Length: 251
Image 1 (cartoon, rainbow, N blue to C red):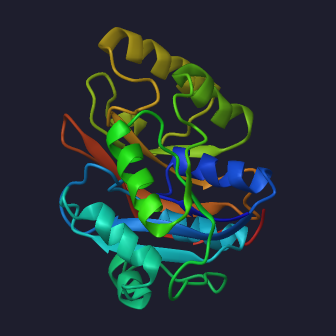
Image 2: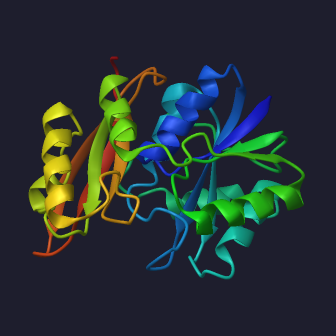
Image 3: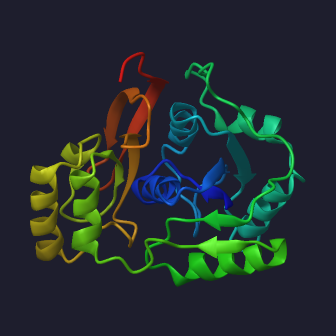
């Protein structure tokens, strides 16, 4: 089975990449949608260039796709990217941060993707899942959502138990302060997050937009990603601004 993975650099899509590899499938490409606008109903906003470094670490080509994030067009922008109707070189120039050094291992995919399926890390967003499935029908490929409706507690614990290095890239929920920006999701952090989610009534897995994440290491990655970053916190919400990132020279 030849598959592509819709990869934001965050926890769920990174887990979906690992899952696809564990099936013994040939992961042909990681596909990242880079939002040039201020918001998106479907795609992550922060830290998505990390997905390129994940692809380079695993040894998989990367396909960046641009969208303004407009609800009526963003899934069609993705579809055009998968068909090869959009130039990935221009998308790379737009999506790649100026101050990041391009790794020698990074291969940017050109042209249409020849795959049998698209794997996505959707958890509970019917909005996203339905639109992706319709797009895949138009493309004549299968849509896989291996994490669909995973219990939040079990899902979050799986990252800790399987050795993923998940960092909080943005926070925007009451109870999650600026001290969480860049923090690693380990056992202690998960315990604290569980208490806060119960106290402030937000989703433990962040599925309601309470936080976004980036993954800088995982069981399927040959080398970790090293980040130089600074937190930006306005008193209510914040982002972990990655100033530069590179693949570690050592495992």
